[in-house]
Length: 492
Image 1 (spheres, rainbow, N blue to C red):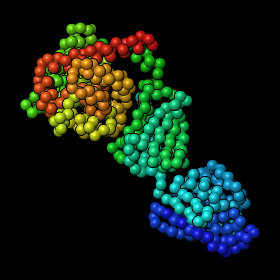
Image 2 (cartoon, rainbow, N blue to C red; image 1 turned 45 degrees about the horizontal axis):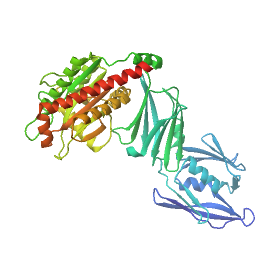
Image 3 (cartoon, rainbow, N blue to C red; image 1 turned 180 degrees about the vertical axis):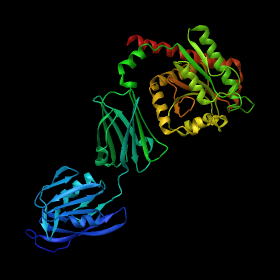
Image 4 (cartoon, rainbow, N blue to C red; image 1 turned 90 degrees about the vertical axis):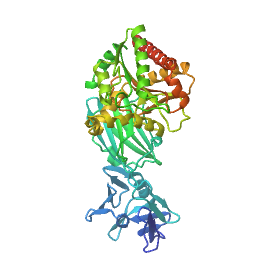
């Protein structure tokens, strides 16, 4: 931290003194002195000593009595006899003018440090009574951003100096077309961010520091279908995706959605073949249980509705995760339902839950996704995952996020209908990063129908009548979702 102390040197105005202010720099445990001119209720500080104490750069035009300070990336122009500072071509006015003494320029301390705190050093404080300045030079932890334009949206990458927790980050779009990102604990380099070259759906950027919170506002050129943020594998990056209609044709997308009807559903029985999935104490295999439930759901749909049913597997064979989503997309599926059975080291845990695809966020959800994704190790074409770049992951996320609200609605209905059929706990709707759901261009969910790790629930799952209840609950949920979706389309 930096500290400044005052001593008398010269008469400047009535009873005026030259003095030193102690400057404490917290970031490098450094203490230095800055010369001052002191008068009645006035303190002026030496610009040369400020530059020295901050290890900054100085450019001098002695003929014109001007100095240019380069402090933490900011260009500050100071001229004798004027009360204006020019910071990166923006004017700031002080109450009193700059004074010249002995070849140096002295700026009014209170005004100058107030401006310096706003434009360059958020942590700076000036105590006039104690004649002390404290600041932390290394303060910015939200440093820059980059915008990338894609065919179906815009990606914003924000470079940070630390990893923020999810609870510290929030976002929303207001009715005037501004997208706001708020980072609690963020200290933003407003000058750098505001100068970022805009492209894609971003028209303008305005960043602001509000106490210990950073806020970045993006003016949108047009509406977006969905917005999502998450922290990258790089802990020093926040990635935002703003999805727009392909070819910027919102009207075309609306017409397509108006013709959308649930006429094809893809049912995915998890695991299979060399991948048994999880198993119970008494040898019950996940792959067998979920195949039976999946077929029961399919038979109900085929028998009682005109919906076309597409299966990713109808027998005990191994199907790679990437191929399951490929089957769904190529079949023109309008809904993708992947059926699984759960497991937990705590054998007392029971219940059913439904997942959406997301890069979220809880430890439990991550554990479930990790177990389901572990099948990748059994696949021959591992290149499909090992060479999956972040850009492709982002693109997949943008594709699935278009149907996020519909997926949420379907998941909620499934939990509601299964709750009517089963007596075990309803564990609710959750989110996790399942590869089998990634990139599905339709509403998609993954159902965990129970815990085979629990001996009582394993016994239930081995019972055909119990599996029938699960299948009926899923079937009724699909029918209810179909009716609600087509009612909305009919009203539009």
